[in-house]
Amino acid sequence: MSKEQVILELQDLQKHFFLGGGQILKAVDGVNLRVYRGETLGLVGETGCGKSTLGRTVLRLYRPTAGRVFFDGIDVHNCRRDKGRDLYRRMQMIFQDPYASLNPRMTVGEIVGEALDIHGLARGEARRKRIEQLLFMAGLNPEHAGRFPHEFSGGQRQRVGIARALAVEPELIVCDEPISALDVSIQAQVVNLLRELQSRFGLTYLFIAHDLSMVKYISDRVAVMYLGRVVELAESHELYTNPCHPYTRALMSAIPVADPELESTRRRVVLEGEIPSPINPPPGCTFAGRCPQAEEICRREVPLLKEKKAGHLVACHAV
Image (tube, rainbow, N blue to C red):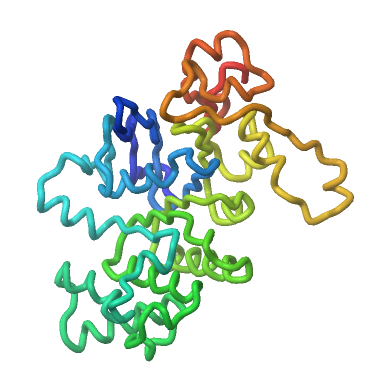
């Protein structure tokens, strides 16, 4: 990881969905982030907090309502068409559902080779060998290139998705909950494969997940999202040992510990109240209604993400 070289930068990124009756769903609501080349940035938070929407907006699958996304200095959503085609090659995604993201009418070889065809990277015998090489790197038998997705297990299908993402030799891969649909016994294998590929090819990951233990294992830094905003960002070890935001502390207290004696002495932080609707979020800090430390200012002013100590950023008036 090179902290001197920013590969991805989000500047006040917003993605709102306009619903019927004049309602607006604020999925991503003002996110500022930097991802450094060669690192894994974990992105965690409750279901519906905007993690996947953020990842899809980064990859141009959604157009932002406001704000900007820069990849290697290029404005992702406001660049020339030829530049955009190059960006599609340099940024890839591994989707959450390894079956829904694969075309059931195409063989595995066709799925992996499709990107090679689109970008004109290999033809004929070179294409066949490249597909076999990609399947082997992803931990699959190259001889299975002629099989269809339904003939594989969930873990194998996710490996097909990884091989497809690697086909165009990307620099950044957005991993959108790549292990949540897999058996626990397979999750570690897939994560170890991702780490091995990162070391081998110098990849950068934006790793979106629910599993806090797995995020701690794979990530260099971790960002915590709540209702469309990043509320805390720090290096992985620092965040897990010294969480500052009340919401982050509640998340960390929910991680199970294997030692029964230690687990029995831990203080569980139980949040009261309901998660506000992203269609009609309250003024000020969106977490104020559930926060045990909330003050009057919290209900009036949105807290900014500020550095509380070196490399540790928190968006909280009470910290």
